[in-house]
Amino acid sequence: MLRCKVGLLRVPPTRIINGGMTMINIRMKSNLPENFDPKKDLPSSGEWKHLKQHIPGEGVQKDDLKSRLPKFPLAKETVPTLLPRPGVPQVGPKYSFRQVIQILKNKKAPELIYEAEPHKLYFLACFCCGTVFTIYGLVLLEYAWFQSNKDYEENVEELTEPLRTREWAVSLLKHSVFGVIALTAAYGAFMFPTRLIRRMWYLPGPVEHIKFTSYPLIPGRPTPVYTLPLNNIFRKHKARIWTGKGFYGTADNSLFFFTLKEAGEKGRNWIVDRKGFFWSDGRVFDLLFGKETVAEAEAGIPYDEQVGIVNREVEKKRKELRNKHGFFYKWKIQASEMKKDVSAASNYIKTIKENQSKKNQIDDGSSKK
Image (cartoon, rainbow, N blue to C red; front, side):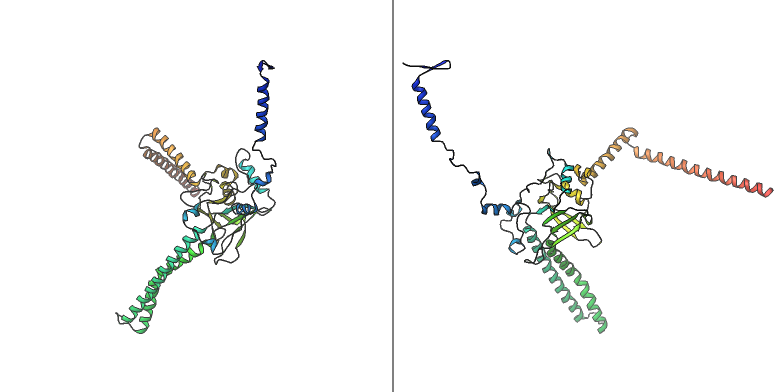
């Protein structure tokens, strides 16, 4: 039998031929495409149109009635729909927080820094609350009208006509207070969606500005657009925007929105939903609207945590004083402070007496002369 050498092994020629034919058959039956075109894997025009609706700044925000009505089950409306915007730097190994802020400050064109998720649940809640308060207000006003007329007709105190008219007006005003309060609450509920911020842009320049859009009161009207200097709008209260929770670090279990306020006594309040797209993360907004330094914003210490740090320092000092002076350290400190006050008062009195005695001596010397 013929054999050939392959390296140090002796392999029959027939096995080599059979192995070669097997490799050829495997190659001929492979699933590799003959004409590979990577463009075929790209989204189609319809898929790209649908995908753009989930990219911040790319979708078209409508103001019709249909865009305000939620779909059932309502749990679907709580699911986030916005994707991260491409090209937005994130704080991490590649960029520090200072570099991210510098990138934003160096922008030459308006930069989208915020976009909210659809506010359909807000509209539903406001409509329900407004309707309930309106019904209560009308019922209370009707009761006020009925009760005042009843008191006027009965005239239990047998008052004259001018006094009856006056008492009727007083009774009407007195019973209408709760109805007016309910109607005022209804007005606030119906107007609340017009204070929701939908999109927000940072406008660079010598004087930085903020541009944002909201909702019109009546569906179908043009989208309201507001432009304010950055120095004229700030974060209301002490609540920080950055919480360190969620994708952008803005999620909060206690409150699902934060408030921005315009400068001035009559400045308007604007509502920003925490569940939305934020440029980079929430610390950028603490820097812009909280008027914090870069170091404070980068640290991202919430206001409650700052108070907690102060309280822990105070408690630490109390423990040190308790270990040093015992359980009654407060009384000992108060006693020492009282001793200091008494000694200071006695020294002050001695000084006054000495000055008075010197003055008397001078007066006696001048009188003898």
